[in-house]
Image (cartoon, rainbow, N blue to C red; front, side, top):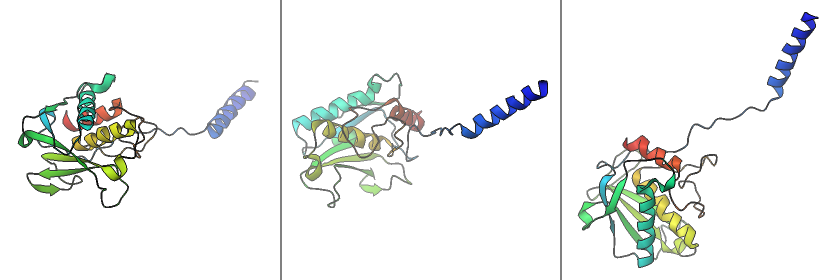
Length: 196
């Protein structure tokens, strides 16, 4: 009887192992370039260029508030970025163009600089990020998408990369669809990875 019970237990265990679906454990709640702003993100400044409308400035100001205050996620970061009194203080400059970016269908782009020299985010830290919205695509979006474009590109300006792992909510998902009005806990974990 004991042998039959043990054999039945072992057989049952083997069947459950073989027919239980494997669970994939995702390890990437955020993606970064492993490069970052050389000045950090604490007590830093951003700049509105004269290419922006009042509405765009308000959206950018609101989304930076959400980055700075952790967007009610409970994840706190060293982020503290406010409007500067001149562009030379800025670690992020915001631009708008009525045109498109190389005809690519992209609503926003971020470029990285040390001084006046553009650098590659994949292998160099940077001193300032230029964040652009491209009117030919941006203008055809809902207000929710327009706001998310600024939030998404600001994430790039801090050093976050695209994160297309849909099991982890992130404003860095592509395509930008208006689902997020600010950073998620995962995005803020990426900030902490880079700057803490």
